[in-house]
Length: 254
Image 1 (cartoon, helix red, strand yellow):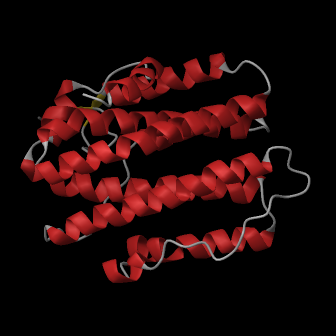
Image 2: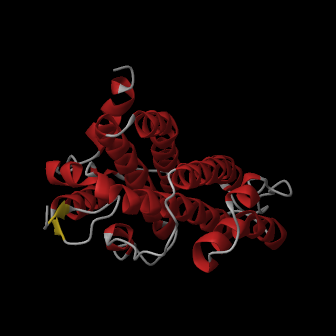
């Protein structure tokens, strides 16, 4: 397949493949509902993470407020169950140009990469919701998986290492998402197969952008931290997990 070259660096970056047991469980029709809901929430969380990084490290309050307003309709839908597909069709617009803080040495690069990432993640959010809507799948609240939290709890508590660690974690989350979309796509119906394959290019670029920013901000070798989080990520993905979600581990009940 043409996307195999895209996946090669992803497979080299990840320390372990997704377990076959997860693929088996994910392709079962009765699990599609929770998979799509969790996927949609993951798209919002990815956008929120990118927005947090911009607001904390790169922009003034006015620009930060514009970013908050951009995400508000999506957060209202997920957390308050208010809004509709039609409302969100008009929502993915940023109200003003985002200006970097004058004292941020990497602000513009962080803004450029993360604003594009947010825009794409929110578009993906809308696409998943549209698929759910067309299939009669209602959104309902679900608990988050252990995955992201399992890495974030190991983030260093002093800067700039905190930011570097978070960027490395972002790279692993995007890379894993890319790997899972590719592995799962052949087992799904034509619409979902085409949709998941369509996401691979942006997810692969997001992983590269996160890693490039981490290396740029560190200004030195970060291979030790990459390896550290790579081992953590692989353990979370490979070890037994009784909670089935998009980023969960080896299912304990098949």
